[in-house]
Amino acid sequence: MALADFQEKHLPVVEKELLNFLQEQTSEPILLEAMNYSVKAGGKRLRPLLLLAVVAGFQKEITTGAYQTAAALEMIHTYSLIHDDLPAMDDDTLRRGQATNHVVYGEALAILAGDGLLTEAFHLLSRAQVPASEKLLLLQLLAEKAGAKGMVAGQVADIQGEGQQLDLAGLAAIHRRKTGDLLTFSLLAGGILAQQDPAVLTVLEQLAQHVGLAFQIRDDLLDVVATPEEVGKTTGHDAVAGKNTYPGLLGLEGAKKALATELAQASGKLTTMSQEYAFDTSLLQELLAKFEM
Ligand code: GRG
Image (cartoon, rainbow, N blue to C red; front, side):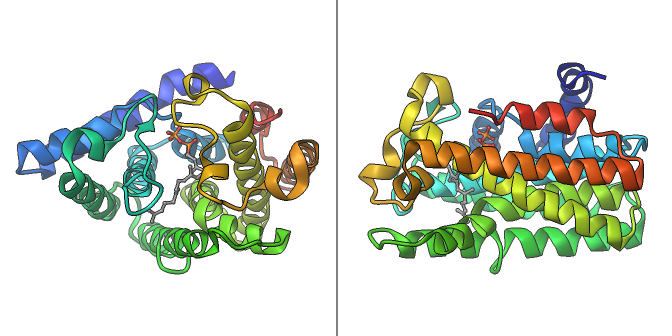
C-alpha cells in the first residue's frame, strides 16, 4: 500500500481515539478546548505514522491498542510543542500554521493544556487494548523516552546550550534526547506491538537514531531555508535565539550532506531488517524519502 493510502486509512482512527479520550476524560470545557486547539491544529502525525508503519512492516494487524498507543504518543508530542512555544521557553507565536496555544488561551491555560495532554497520554496508554506485559513495557518506555533522561532532559540541555558554542557531539547529545527519543519510542513501540524480540528492537533503535538525527538536521535546515507558510511556524528563529544548529556548525551544504548521510544509514538499517527479519520496508522508505533536501 502506498504511504498516502496508508495515512488516509489509519490516521483518522488515531485521531478518533485521541479526541474521544480527551472528550471523555476532561471535566472543564475550556481545558478541553485548549487541548483540542493544539491537537486539531494539523500536525503531520509523523510519530503515529512511524509507529503504525512499523507494525504494518512486520505484516501484523493494526489493532485498536496500536491506534491508542499512537494517540498517546501524539498527545505527548503535542504537549511538548505547547510548552516549547511558551514565553519562558522558545517564545513562539506560530505553530502548525496557527497562533500558538498561549497566544490564544493565555500562559496559564497553555501550561495546563500541556499538563493535561501529558497526563492523559499515560492514562490512555494504561487503558489501551494491549496485552498487559506489552503495555507495561510501552508505559515504561514512553516514560523513559519522554522523561527526565529523554525529551525533557534534551530540552534542558538545549536551553542551557543557548549562547554557548557546542561541537557536533554536544549538539547530537541534545537532539538525541530532545527530538530523537520520542521518535525512537515511535519505532520501538511498533516493534513491541508487533511482538518482536530484543534483537529486532536493537536494530529498530539503531534505525531510530539515524531517523532522529535526519529529522533534526532537516528541521534546522528548514528554519534557514523555508518560509513560515511552508512549515507553519516562524523561521529564522534559531539564529535569533543563539541556538546551536547543524547549518550553524556545518554550513548549509555541510548540513545537507550530513542529512544525506543519516538518511543513507537509515536506509541501510531498513535493508538489514528486510533481509534478516522479513520486514516490508516500503512504507518507511517512502516516508524517509520525504526527508530528502
Ligand atoms: C517542552 C519538555 C519539552 C520539550 C520540548 C519537541 C520539543 C521538546 C521541542 C520542539 C522544538 C522543535 C521545533 C524541535 C525540532 C524538531 C521537532 C520536534 C519539530 C516538530 O515536530 P513535527 O515537525 O511537528 O513532527 P508537527 O506539528 O508536524 O507534529
